[in-house]
Length: 126
Image 1: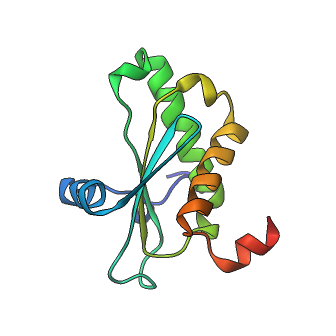
Image 2: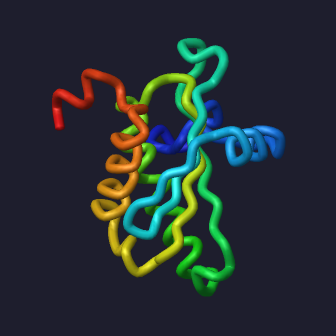
């Protein structure tokens, strides 16, 4: 694996995790992006985990894959700023608004700030 990639520990994989976050988590929306999040039971034992869910309504495969890549990169660049043990699912609803990594970062960090899942040290830097 590439040294700059997203580690396996930082990704959500299991169906029960997805269902638990969507059913029991908190949902926020901003600028064409929906975020569901839930704090884990062993918060300090593991890093924040992340997944992107994209509907076919977003557009053809090229558009869907680009949106996923941009959001994953935004999380990868900012995962140290998110509280450990937090599970996050992001779903883009408007691919036009995610034109580059900076737009994806802005949307993701705004949603994380509203959800109060940013670590205190990262809020001081912003």
